[in-house]
Image 1 (cartoon, helix red, strand yellow):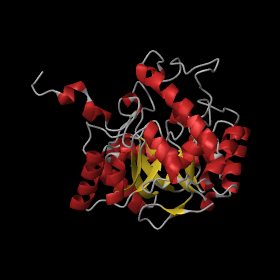
Image 2 (cartoon, rainbow, N blue to C red):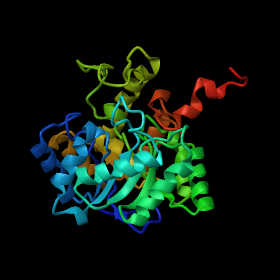
Image 3 (cartoon, rainbow, N blue to C red):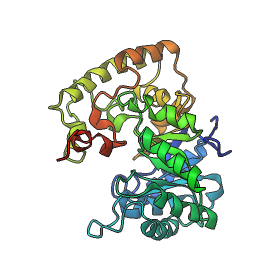
Length: 342
């Protein structure tokens, strides 16, 4: 597996990053099996693991910590904070100094490590000054508890604001951004990817299979279709024309993959990591079988003809269903677009 520079940090990481969201009650609650999956990923050359405090209420971090015991130095370990850890307590979430300083201790304990390689803000907050968040994260870097800091699901303007604040206030800067990116959700090509490239940041993208749409599991003739029972309804509501359009596109993408001599999964992941602005794609297996289906993508190169055909089906910068964009969403609300005071 060929490794890539993570922005300008000097760190080299694998083009596939093992996402740990499915380890624990949210997905695979068999800890022994989850550990085997993590070990298989490491043995295959993946040296990058991404998790978050909120995944399975901390269970994912615990599983990762147990699995990498004895191999910690071989892993570039990333986790995130921001999402609610207690729905009843409004202060057990967010990007405040108070919460960051408390929650990093919890993550370090669950991960069974003395430092986090990459500590990321899971989402931007319109209610918290970016200097507040960056100031706390800077202190964690200087204390040695965190090596690097990053953002997730930031819009282009939010990325620029954070970089400016770091420079003006002499604070640590975000060295990575973690946005959603897939063949069906190409919105970041319009602004986010050019912005992170301009600032020399690494990019680890999530949902390369578009939440399962590009796994080959859901086809027009499949007996089962995506349902909204356990997922955000707008993204999987089959009464929406945009989602019906996604099904049509998946049919054509499957034909392109067959013509290219790869699986749809391999083509979808390779499409993401073949972009020059992408450092690593996060793949989140629930089973060993899923992991094995992802691994070949690390070495898959897509011919220009294949990329051209994909562009014909989904144009660069286009997200088929806008609800699949989960970055900068508060900037696009109806209220934010109003030209008069409510």
